[in-house]
Image (cartoon, helix red, strand yellow):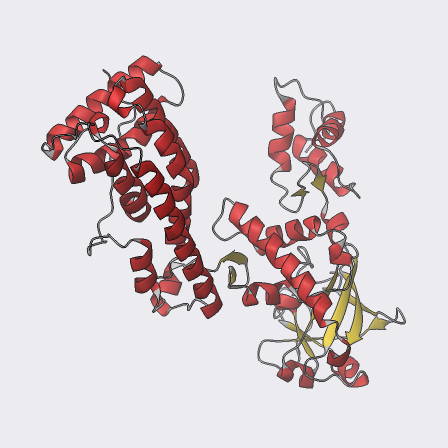
Length: 478
């Protein structure tokens, strides 16, 4: 849709610019090209352009901030597929995982006048390789292309397999020649000719990149069509060398990752409700790695707590416990006075929540207000209760909570608590690591109880309770 001036709409302008890209482009150049097609009188036109650009999930943002088009990322990428023994004997190549996500948005069912799903060319001769669609039940697709055509799941390449005397363990070596038209070069490598050391290096590199992207993602299960191009963009040159294992093989073998059906990749410890219902076993390698990390964490925690214990002053008065209701009421008054002193600002409500979470624990389990808490109480909250029971124990919230606590105790004006802020700073890394380890405990693993006991040696037996807080829309007034 064009505007009355004849200029294309913002959506059309963004699509036109992206379609013309053949190399990475800087953020500013992308904005300038779009605004040249779609002039804007908006106060912040770049924000509107970038908001529309974010809708194009096939456009990958590189580590240097530039945007890379899918053609540039995929063209020339090499990968291998090792068929199963049954597929080798029958000359069958499954579309998933072999060609995913390299077919972009092409339709496997075809249709009147539709281009072929993909084109295969011989790596050595360049001649086109004929293939036939193969359906889920292993029989050739009999009905022609049309609206109700069966979506086939594999390619029948039996003549080509027979010509190369394909044996179990041999590899298909594929190169993406034209991503837009789905043209692939197809080669053959016997198992005896494979460079195992080269494959291992490529696999380790791919696993490291995928793990970093999964950990960084805002989604617990990022989609394959987004994360694989992002990984290939980071591996731009390496992805064009001698190929390692297929990315799906790398994920299934990794102790840190797992595939989620045929649409996403997640951490190895990620569980959906259906996984908990029917079971999903963690790999032994993953559990051994987790146990070693738990032991390393316990050693670091003991060392840091011993250092801070030496700083305790014997003359520091210990707080006198009171009822939970009284302690919580006192904490809310203290928080309100603190926020009033800090001044009303956009972060006030969030800071109220950051201080309310430990206040509820201190009132309920220690019988003291926030201002009366001592270091051992805060340690019990941060290193035992908080990682297990608080709903929003994420890194970002933890950082804000610790910053708010440090600021609160700095403003308390109590000499005996002057050492709390630096002590809390030392706990920051421990809290983050403990939360990460807790989140990786597999509930369906026979080792989970033992690992939990090692991570929380002083934990009580009842862990079903979850700390829930009802927050007002605005913080209380002093």
